[in-house]
Length: 67
Image 1 (tube, rainbow, N blue to C red):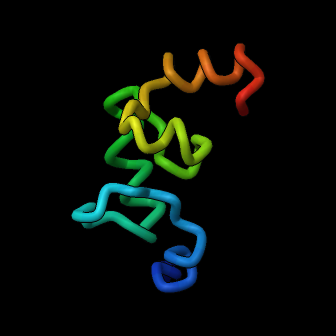
Image 2 (cartoon, helix red, strand yellow):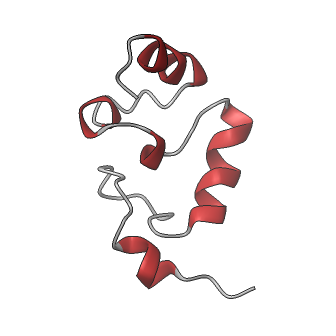
């Protein structure tokens, strides 16, 4: 399967400037899921900038109706 990295970059919300996985969604998921994290695109901008990508942080945001 061919990666659509250029197209994905248009909607990638990762604010970590030196991230080598920007736009490479499959690589991003493969990196974050084993660490019990979700990628930046799962979080609102304010929460994403904290770099806390944990499942627990995501659950808190859902509970607070922020997602």
